[in-house]
Length: 193
Image: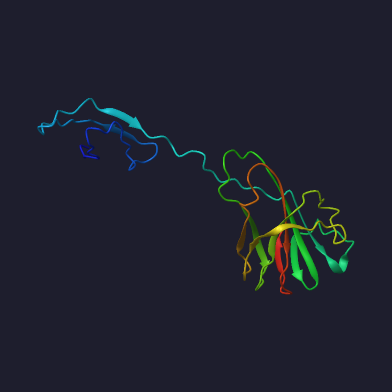
């Protein structure tokens, strides 16, 4: 459209146009100015097509195993439950495991996303845990412990909302990842399985 996009000194041998849009073709013409200020006619237009934005995608993984454990039913398995519970009194913890595959490139954001069916004024903290547990056999007596420091901590959460625990620090690519929700209060959190 004949708009001047840059004027550079004679010693400059290259230039980058940073004001372009992905997947768009532009035409560039060069005009030269000599020491006396004379300007040449335009050179042959050089068409350039910018590349598309690549490598950015969102992938969703459903938990391949989820269960909760309850201290007051220490030998019982709740792997078939449709609601997952985390509470300080009576003591209950929720376990989640994800098999992440087909991811290429750098993971820039990862979140555990849960649907709240019963609110809490102080949501449980999310920790990593080991992956060797089984949904139908997990109990209070054989549950794995939390591994490392807290990954995420939310405050008050409401019924009928999605909550998201950031886990980018541990989910770095393909692999199996497991998490445990550790309650902080007797005002428990219930989420859909």
